[in-house]
Length: 286
Image (cartoon, rainbow, N blue to C red; front, side):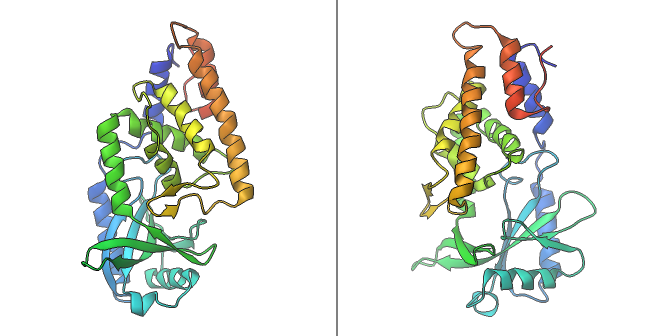
């Protein structure tokens, strides 16, 4: 229960946030995966990625992503993404679950949190020998996706440093909203939208949430970022449905924000609407 909107947002963040630094656990899981799979596949490099090491993970809804850079000639060249994923699953052996719905990883189940999504990757270098990018599988389209996970992690760190603590808070709140939608967008897509926001007062969480919806509404059919279309995984039909969801949330967010803007003090109605956007983890008024 909350009497004011700022306190309600604080309670909401506490309810959804995955607290603590889990990078040591991430490296322990990574090392276990490498030992498990290394006798079957030649691994050139490995590292954790995703929302846990970027500090944008949700409590009870976060798995760990591990990138495995495989020997290109032996394990990736001329192979479909589905074949590479199937080979990784076989190499993981007992405990390996299904291939993720997005067709990019094999889930390894553990007795304790977190489970691990194992993502095979090919590594590419520039003429000077520096790593230019990686490619990871998309089994659903049988394509290889260009990605720069270390660059994205650095961009998220820099944005959090420049924009303040509420940057990651807003990202997590949007992720909580997103996971409850019929058409959810990928976590990377969601974070890129946040990175592309400019001129936002991040001290006003409600306004920042509204501005994310404004930016997202026009970032679903095409969003060019770091040499690729971040929205390419969405079919036109799914992009249209996502746009409708975001448009509705955008209008609600503006209405909720306006109830406590410019001297207004209708916290009761504002909290009611924010709760309708974010669900029962957002506290009720009182």
